[in-house]
Image (cartoon, rainbow, N blue to C red):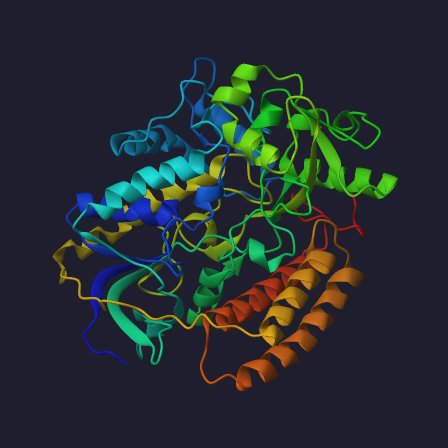
Length: 500
């Protein structure tokens, strides 16, 4: 163990919320350390976000309308004060991004659940573009240090239960970094499911760290499934943006019949949970393995200027979306719940904060409104920045290890257990649940836990793959337990034994 590594603030995660917070802190003269477990900081869920970021800007629209749309989508479980606080600051957060070099398209989009056009975007690659732009700023900001291959396995607490540091997996021995504040910005947990739009490292690390430190997790039953991921045997995690439906694309079944009007008055612009379940029901009716998104009538201008990423991804798999419908299926996409925080992004544990998707900010309730996720990243990042002002007067120098050597080796046993956990979560805690399925899934997870413990006991040291296995098992168990406790269907949580 090392003795002297230190940073006044440690931010775990290099997605939008983490980068945004580090830049705001640097503007105030406060240094920070951003840790990413990945070899490259671009490996985040932010990088995969296509649609955009929601903020009121057009005549006729209003803050009140954006608030109403968010509350309606959240099915009564949003925190109204949090919704108001986050949405009111959205235009200002857009200006922050523009100040750092983000240039959105002139075209303002519309997505499901929104009453007006209010989606700021860059083509259909908004997340990657914003992330790349902010990362460029981070890399040339002396007050921000970025450390790759830094997988945090534990939060360190003193005898008074106050967070004082982090422990990072390293070979041959782990290292510790002392700090005055830890900010969880680790994103979501999509990899706990067999099918997901998330990046490979979305294993719920921040949820596990927060829970182990004593923070509360809230609303973990609410996992949003994106209705339209590309269905192809060679495609992995390929999202087909909801903005296509905002521009007029519509879903059809295997008989080429549009079906969403049978399920909701907003048809293809219904909230994502409804669209996802509708697709599942259509597939169940026909026995088909997918449905199709028909965008063949959209003008070439949209493909050339706004949906270039979707077009290229489809072409990569031999699909021409200008002339043929795109095969799609739902997949786990977004974690609406998370580590419970107050209005200042503080958890129940001293010196521990959470921002972005890993946090339960109160914005989403039972279901997330499209393009409110990137907004949550910057808004909660700003709120944490306001809360961390007290560190201006503390020791500000940063001392870091020059290099980390992660333990990346895995084994066939760990790979098999990974697959078992993910299949269990998908089969028993996926789009459509019941008491019987959830109980069966929890029993299965208990058996898998025994196998995990046996496998880990034979390892010479803890590896990244093993830690991620521990994390997804914890997350899967938490999701199924939360789903069992909530007996009524609401939002993304659909119980077949309570279908109303």
